[in-house]
Image 1 (cartoon, helix red, strand yellow):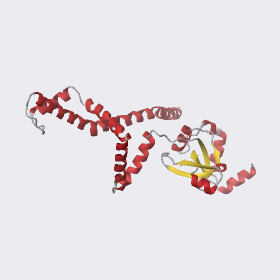
Image 2 (cartoon, one colour; image 1 turned 90 degrees about the vertical axis):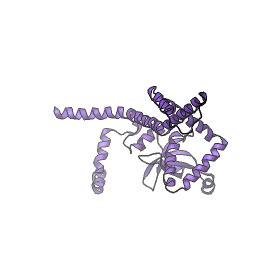
Image 3 (cartoon, one colour; image 1 turned 180 degrees about the vertical axis):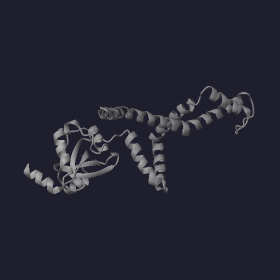
Image 4 (tube, helix red, strand yellow; image 1 turned 135 degrees about the vertical axis):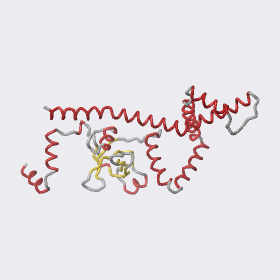
Length: 261
Protein backbone atom coordinates (compact mmCIF):
# COMPACT_ATOMS: atom_id res chain seq x y z
CA UNK A 1 0.00 0.00 0.00
CA UNK A 2 2.88 2.35 0.87
CA UNK A 3 4.61 1.55 -2.39
CA UNK A 4 1.43 2.30 -4.34
CA UNK A 5 1.04 5.62 -2.57
CA UNK A 6 4.67 6.46 -3.32
CA UNK A 7 4.20 5.73 -7.01
CA UNK A 8 1.02 7.81 -7.13
CA UNK A 9 2.66 10.67 -5.27
CA UNK A 10 5.66 10.68 -7.57
CA UNK A 11 3.53 10.50 -10.72
CA UNK A 12 1.13 13.28 -9.73
CA UNK A 13 3.89 15.42 -8.26
CA UNK A 14 5.78 15.28 -11.55
CA UNK A 15 2.56 16.01 -13.43
CA UNK A 16 1.81 19.01 -11.20
CA UNK A 17 5.40 20.24 -11.48
CA UNK A 18 5.23 20.00 -15.28
CA UNK A 19 2.01 22.05 -15.23
CA UNK A 20 3.16 24.82 -12.87
CA UNK A 21 6.86 25.06 -13.75
CA UNK A 22 6.43 26.94 -17.08
CA UNK A 23 4.37 29.63 -15.35
CA UNK A 24 6.86 29.92 -12.48
CA UNK A 25 9.82 30.15 -14.85
CA UNK A 26 8.02 32.76 -16.97
CA UNK A 27 7.32 34.91 -13.90
CA UNK A 28 10.91 34.39 -12.72
CA UNK A 29 12.35 35.56 -16.04
CA UNK A 30 10.07 38.62 -16.14
CA UNK A 31 10.92 39.56 -12.54
CA UNK A 32 14.63 39.18 -13.26
CA UNK A 33 14.25 41.32 -16.38
CA UNK A 34 12.38 44.08 -14.54
CA UNK A 35 14.88 43.92 -11.65
CA UNK A 36 17.78 44.23 -14.08
CA UNK A 37 16.20 47.24 -15.77
CA UNK A 38 15.57 48.94 -12.43
CA UNK A 39 19.04 48.16 -11.05
CA UNK A 40 21.18 49.06 -14.04
CA UNK A 41 19.03 51.67 -15.78
CA UNK A 42 16.17 52.88 -13.62
CA UNK A 43 18.17 53.93 -10.57
CA UNK A 44 20.53 56.07 -12.64
CA UNK A 45 17.53 57.72 -14.29
CA UNK A 46 16.12 58.38 -10.81
CA UNK A 47 19.40 60.02 -9.81
CA UNK A 48 19.30 62.17 -12.94
CA UNK A 49 15.70 63.24 -12.29
CA UNK A 50 16.56 64.10 -8.69
CA UNK A 51 19.51 66.18 -9.87
CA UNK A 52 17.27 68.05 -12.33
CA UNK A 53 14.75 68.73 -9.56
CA UNK A 54 17.55 70.09 -7.40
CA UNK A 55 18.78 72.44 -10.13
CA UNK A 56 15.25 73.57 -10.95
CA UNK A 57 14.47 74.29 -7.31
CA UNK A 58 17.61 76.37 -7.00
CA UNK A 59 16.71 78.38 -10.06
CA UNK A 60 13.20 78.83 -8.66
CA UNK A 61 14.57 80.11 -5.35
CA UNK A 62 17.21 82.15 -7.21
CA UNK A 63 20.03 80.28 -5.56
CA UNK A 64 23.33 79.87 -7.41
CA UNK A 65 23.18 76.50 -9.18
CA UNK A 66 25.65 73.88 -8.02
CA UNK A 67 26.66 71.08 -10.34
CA UNK A 68 27.83 68.95 -7.42
CA UNK A 69 24.90 67.92 -5.19
CA UNK A 70 26.48 67.82 -1.73
CA UNK A 71 24.17 69.98 0.40
CA UNK A 72 21.21 69.25 2.61
CA UNK A 73 18.75 70.10 -0.14
CA UNK A 74 19.97 67.10 -2.10
CA UNK A 75 19.49 64.85 0.94
CA UNK A 76 15.97 66.19 1.41
CA UNK A 77 15.07 65.40 -2.19
CA UNK A 78 16.38 61.83 -1.83
CA UNK A 79 14.49 61.37 1.45
CA UNK A 80 11.27 62.66 -0.13
CA UNK A 81 11.83 60.35 -3.10
CA UNK A 82 12.14 57.34 -0.82
CA UNK A 83 9.27 58.27 1.49
CA UNK A 84 6.81 58.58 -1.41
CA UNK A 85 8.18 55.45 -3.16
CA UNK A 86 8.97 57.28 -6.40
CA UNK A 87 11.54 54.75 -7.68
CA UNK A 88 8.95 53.58 -10.20
CA UNK A 89 9.54 56.83 -12.13
CA UNK A 90 12.99 55.66 -13.18
CA UNK A 91 11.57 52.28 -14.16
CA UNK A 92 8.93 53.84 -16.39
CA UNK A 93 11.39 56.30 -17.90
CA UNK A 94 13.75 53.39 -18.63
CA UNK A 95 11.04 51.80 -20.81
CA UNK A 96 10.44 55.14 -22.50
CA UNK A 97 14.18 55.49 -23.13
CA UNK A 98 14.34 52.01 -24.67
CA UNK A 99 11.37 52.89 -26.88
CA UNK A 100 13.04 56.13 -28.02
CA UNK A 101 16.26 54.26 -28.70
CA UNK A 102 14.32 51.71 -30.76
CA UNK A 103 12.80 54.51 -32.83
CA UNK A 104 16.26 55.99 -33.31
CA UNK A 105 17.77 52.68 -34.43
CA UNK A 106 14.89 52.26 -36.89
CA UNK A 107 15.76 55.58 -38.57
CA UNK A 108 18.26 55.84 -41.40
CA UNK A 109 20.83 57.68 -39.28
CA UNK A 110 20.40 55.41 -36.29
CA UNK A 111 20.54 52.23 -38.37
CA UNK A 112 23.83 53.26 -39.95
CA UNK A 113 25.32 54.32 -36.61
CA UNK A 114 24.29 51.09 -34.89
CA UNK A 115 25.75 48.99 -37.70
CA UNK A 116 29.05 50.82 -37.23
CA UNK A 117 28.96 50.10 -33.49
CA UNK A 118 28.15 46.43 -34.12
CA UNK A 119 31.04 46.09 -36.56
CA UNK A 120 33.28 47.40 -33.78
CA UNK A 121 31.86 44.77 -31.41
CA UNK A 122 32.68 42.03 -33.94
CA UNK A 123 36.32 43.20 -34.03
CA UNK A 124 36.99 43.77 -30.33
CA UNK A 125 38.84 40.98 -28.47
CA UNK A 126 36.76 38.90 -26.03
CA UNK A 127 33.56 40.76 -26.98
CA UNK A 128 33.61 39.23 -30.48
CA UNK A 129 33.62 35.79 -28.85
CA UNK A 130 30.39 36.50 -26.96
CA UNK A 131 28.38 39.16 -28.78
CA UNK A 132 27.53 37.23 -32.01
CA UNK A 133 25.97 34.33 -30.09
CA UNK A 134 24.01 36.57 -27.72
CA UNK A 135 22.77 38.50 -30.76
CA UNK A 136 21.59 35.27 -32.42
CA UNK A 137 19.47 34.37 -29.41
CA UNK A 138 17.97 37.84 -28.98
CA UNK A 139 17.27 38.15 -32.71
CA UNK A 140 15.49 34.79 -32.66
CA UNK A 141 13.35 35.76 -29.65
CA UNK A 142 12.69 39.44 -30.35
CA UNK A 143 13.09 39.97 -34.06
CA UNK A 144 10.01 41.26 -35.90
CA UNK A 145 10.98 39.17 -38.92
CA UNK A 146 10.20 35.69 -37.73
CA UNK A 147 11.57 32.66 -39.51
CA UNK A 148 8.91 31.20 -41.76
CA UNK A 149 8.91 27.45 -42.29
CA UNK A 150 6.71 26.06 -44.99
CA UNK A 151 6.71 22.48 -43.71
CA UNK A 152 8.48 19.90 -41.55
CA UNK A 153 10.45 17.17 -43.30
CA UNK A 154 12.86 14.31 -42.61
CA UNK A 155 16.14 14.29 -44.50
CA UNK A 156 19.17 12.01 -44.52
CA UNK A 157 21.70 14.12 -42.63
CA UNK A 158 24.60 14.17 -41.74
CA UNK A 159 25.05 11.01 -43.83
CA UNK A 160 23.07 8.33 -45.60
CA UNK A 161 21.17 6.12 -43.21
CA UNK A 162 20.79 8.79 -40.51
CA UNK A 163 17.55 10.76 -40.69
CA UNK A 164 17.18 14.21 -39.15
CA UNK A 165 14.13 16.40 -38.79
CA UNK A 166 14.33 19.64 -40.76
CA UNK A 167 12.31 22.74 -41.50
CA UNK A 168 11.92 23.84 -45.10
CA UNK A 169 12.71 27.55 -45.31
CA UNK A 170 12.41 28.03 -49.07
CA UNK A 171 13.94 27.18 -52.45
CA UNK A 172 17.67 26.83 -53.00
CA UNK A 173 20.00 29.69 -53.89
CA UNK A 174 20.00 30.73 -57.54
CA UNK A 175 23.61 29.62 -58.15
CA UNK A 176 22.99 26.13 -56.81
CA UNK A 177 19.76 25.84 -58.80
CA UNK A 178 21.44 26.95 -62.05
CA UNK A 179 24.44 24.64 -61.65
CA UNK A 180 22.80 21.55 -60.19
CA UNK A 181 19.35 21.73 -61.71
CA UNK A 182 16.40 19.84 -60.33
CA UNK A 183 13.98 20.95 -57.65
CA UNK A 184 16.17 21.97 -54.69
CA UNK A 185 15.05 23.00 -51.21
CA UNK A 186 16.76 24.89 -48.40
CA UNK A 187 16.26 23.04 -45.12
CA UNK A 188 17.18 24.16 -41.62
CA UNK A 189 18.24 21.31 -39.30
CA UNK A 190 17.69 22.43 -35.67
CA UNK A 191 19.93 21.05 -32.95
CA UNK A 192 18.81 19.58 -29.61
CA UNK A 193 18.08 20.91 -27.06
CA UNK A 194 18.69 24.45 -28.40
CA UNK A 195 16.80 24.78 -31.70
CA UNK A 196 17.99 28.36 -32.14
CA UNK A 197 21.19 26.83 -33.51
CA UNK A 198 21.59 24.23 -36.22
CA UNK A 199 22.66 23.70 -39.82
CA UNK A 200 21.30 24.93 -43.13
CA UNK A 201 21.53 22.46 -46.01
CA UNK A 202 20.30 22.24 -49.61
CA UNK A 203 18.74 18.98 -50.78
CA UNK A 204 16.69 17.69 -53.67
CA UNK A 205 12.96 17.68 -53.13
CA UNK A 206 12.76 13.95 -53.88
CA UNK A 207 15.23 13.22 -51.06
CA UNK A 208 12.99 14.54 -48.27
CA UNK A 209 10.01 12.97 -46.54
CA UNK A 210 7.18 15.25 -45.44
CA UNK A 211 6.20 14.85 -41.78
CA UNK A 212 2.58 15.53 -40.72
CA UNK A 213 3.43 17.93 -37.89
CA UNK A 214 3.45 21.69 -37.41
CA UNK A 215 6.26 23.95 -36.25
CA UNK A 216 5.25 23.77 -32.56
CA UNK A 217 5.30 19.96 -32.63
CA UNK A 218 8.70 20.02 -34.31
CA UNK A 219 10.03 22.48 -31.73
CA UNK A 220 8.84 20.36 -28.80
CA UNK A 221 10.27 17.23 -30.42
CA UNK A 222 13.68 18.91 -30.85
CA UNK A 223 13.89 20.53 -27.41
CA UNK A 224 12.92 17.29 -25.65
CA UNK A 225 15.39 15.23 -27.66
CA UNK A 226 12.59 13.20 -29.22
CA UNK A 227 10.79 12.43 -25.96
CA UNK A 228 7.74 14.62 -26.69
CA UNK A 229 6.31 13.21 -29.90
CA UNK A 230 3.19 14.43 -31.74
CA UNK A 231 0.10 12.32 -31.10
CA UNK A 232 -0.18 11.46 -34.79
CA UNK A 233 3.34 9.99 -34.71
CA UNK A 234 3.08 8.03 -31.47
CA UNK A 235 3.17 4.27 -31.65
CA UNK A 236 1.13 1.86 -29.57
CA UNK A 237 2.39 0.72 -26.18
CA UNK A 238 3.03 -2.78 -27.53
CA UNK A 239 5.12 -1.42 -30.41
CA UNK A 240 7.10 0.79 -28.00
CA UNK A 241 7.82 -2.13 -25.68
CA UNK A 242 8.86 -4.30 -28.60
CA UNK A 243 11.17 -1.56 -29.88
CA UNK A 244 12.73 -1.17 -26.43
CA UNK A 245 13.46 -4.89 -26.24
CA UNK A 246 15.18 -4.76 -29.60
CA UNK A 247 17.31 -1.82 -28.51
CA UNK A 248 18.89 -3.81 -25.66
CA UNK A 249 19.47 -6.94 -27.73
CA UNK A 250 22.83 -7.55 -29.46
CA UNK A 251 22.73 -7.06 -33.27
CA UNK A 252 22.97 -10.82 -33.89
CA UNK A 253 20.02 -11.56 -31.60
CA UNK A 254 17.98 -8.79 -33.24
CA UNK A 255 18.58 -10.29 -36.70
CA UNK A 256 17.56 -13.75 -35.45
CA UNK A 257 14.37 -12.38 -33.89
CA UNK A 258 13.43 -10.48 -37.05
CA UNK A 259 14.08 -13.61 -39.14
CA UNK A 260 11.91 -15.75 -36.88
CA UNK A 261 9.11 -13.20 -37.08
